Amino acid sequence: MLQVALAPCSPFTVSQDLMREAAALARALKVRLHTHLAENDHDVAYTREKFGCTPAEYAERLGWLGPDVWHAHCVKLDGPGIARFAATGTGVAHCPCSNMRLASGIAPVRAMVDAGVPVGLGVDGSASNDGAQMISEARQAMLLQRVGIALEPFGCDRGPAAMTARDALALATRGGARVLGREDIGTLEPGKCADLALFDQRTLGFAGGAVHDPLGALLLCATAEAAYTVVDGRVVVRQGRLTTFELEPVVEQHNALARQLVEAARAG
Image (cartoon, rainbow, N blue to C red):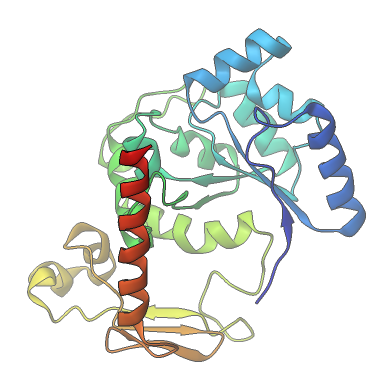
């Protein structure tokens, strides 16, 4: 239930020595590495100006490619960068809602997947994603790829075939497990962790769609909250309500802290 990783925020906010030493430490301790890479045009321009290379080339120089590494975003990963990620087994956490909110661009996920890059879904942080809802993230991943652009030499055309509902759900399940190097999660089968989410498709939002394609309806119909979730065999949500703690006091405290934060920002 606990996996440790070394995770500097980005290679552009810390020194080269810290990145190299973090990689060496992670490999000495046999833990994973994570950072944000090639998120937007600014990242690419900064890397080219300061280091004379692309973000992917910079990551490789620092020892930040390999099957024990995953990078968030990679919106601006180019063709050669995708090829290096695929050859080294380097993972990508695709964060479509954050990428759209920050106008970072459209990550070439179809090209990554076709090349063999491990790709999973992430929500980024609360500074750029107020929902942090994985079903919504999978839906946006699907829709965003359909309006994407071709990336040479992969030639991925936009349109419905660029990302199906099943493709997006694969990113959210098996893809995420592969990115994290986990073989005990990601699919429902004997011997794996009893992690699952159940959705009630008898509701109005799923009417019609769930009759002929329950899996597709999960992403194409109304975005739903889970009716039940089970984590490692333990029921965490039952009939839409958390079982592990009282939610209402936490929401009240959260709102109070949010007011303080906004008021302090206005006063400052």
